[in-house]
Image (cartoon, rainbow, N blue to C red; front, side, top):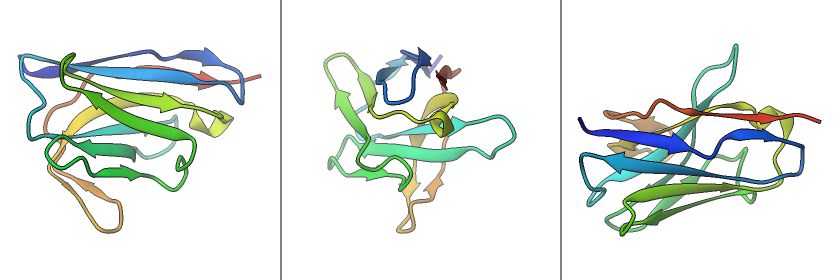
Length: 124
């Protein structure tokens, strides 16, 4: 029963903003690292951002650095991804998942639990 539920996706124009939510169901986020991932049609899944609930360490992919902000609310058991200055290339299904390790190069390892995803479409 342990899983995530993502929400907040939708259609937005370039330059617009969206805030995605990832709520854990059946477990709490204590001591977890939570990552946001995305997959666009015809492209491989990529890690977007992560946050550690133990030490607060945050990582962003170079493609979103300066535009996206990840945060966590332990009262609501929810991780957020604030996405600003959205570009068409941000169009993808966005997922959240637990992460065992964020490597020095930014590669994520050990994604054990996933949500179903939420679709973000950036189009004029």
